[in-house]
Length: 328
Image (cartoon, rainbow, N blue to C red; front, side):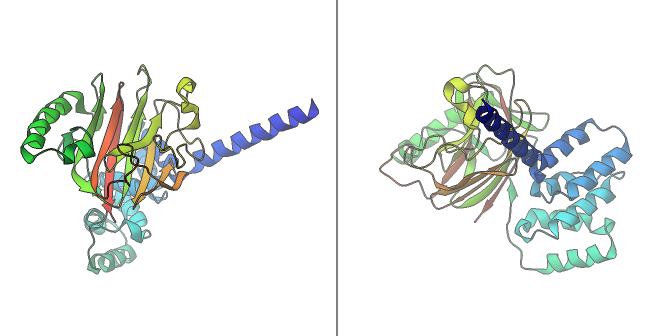
């Protein structure tokens, strides 16, 4: 009995440690700060929250702070936050980052102005590009079959089917309060207009807690998928957590740990794909470490070298926001 109790205590301590680690990640801190900012009503609190965002070092924190650069009451704190993140994270460099730095320039201190000028003088790179403008479905299209089926179609056949797919997509996917939301009732994906080889990606997601069977995912190069679960659905094995390469058979399919926030709360993915290998961080925690993504559509073939990225809906409402993609 003592041994059993000791084991239970050790497991409880481990769970609490994991929970504390999850809560303290910069990614989760940012999610919490964003929720606070949405609820804040006085300027002093809003300024303090934006200042704290600048301390997270998160790329998306920089873009969120940057969205307040036109607000006269908040633009100074927003500018400081943008500079604090952009100037200390060279990997974030790109056209979007430089636009934010140029906009922040008049509102920061002399030392930061000098650093911004030095940054802007460097050779420009594309960097992360926003793939959802928060207003409409520009840059997105409907799903036509799978990559193997599409490659067998003539250009006319593909164009004809794409028209029908786009009509379905516009009926099932909408922009709600600046969020990309699936409001249909079946199983459908929304796809990027562009195709990608090696890339990095940020995307936030939230499952509707009222959904009958909350479930979604991210298709990489047209291939399923980085899984999104309601981890309470133990009958389908969802207790392993989100982020795993669900359709793998030979290579690891489940995540390294459970890092999901509560159902109905926002979660954040960082996804990196190089060759056939995928790395995923969920809420700042490593859940997939350089694992091969198998070709679900034909397991005798390697993964497609270039294809579209797809956001999946699986029968219930799901929300996405802050979708940024960087070609490698």
